[in-house]
Length: 125
Image 1 (cartoon, helix red, strand yellow):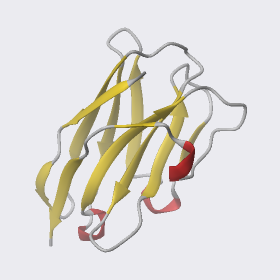
Image 2: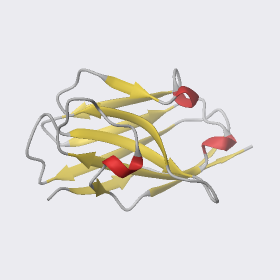
Image 3: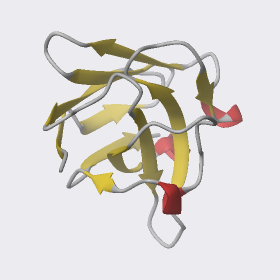
Image 4: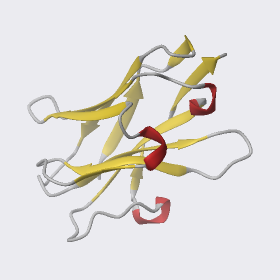
């Protein structure tokens, strides 16, 4: 069982930056897959970025490429999401997610077994 706790959300003006952090406990393998997803009001949850604890392949959604960066601290069991050049359309609840290791890193919500409680990010225009 993996427990995930997000922090770092808040209100920011367009063009600003935020850093989200996800603290994981109960992680068992460096091959586990981690990711950040988001859900805006009235919309389905969507992937933002997915990667492995061990590093290597990382996949960003097109709408965040060049603006968001994921980083890991294996000693602290944390995964951070640095978000720059934020836009009003980035407003959403952001979730950290995890699943056991798999050959191909999935990007679908349904593929992830463990979820944090979410943290609100609001970008004002």
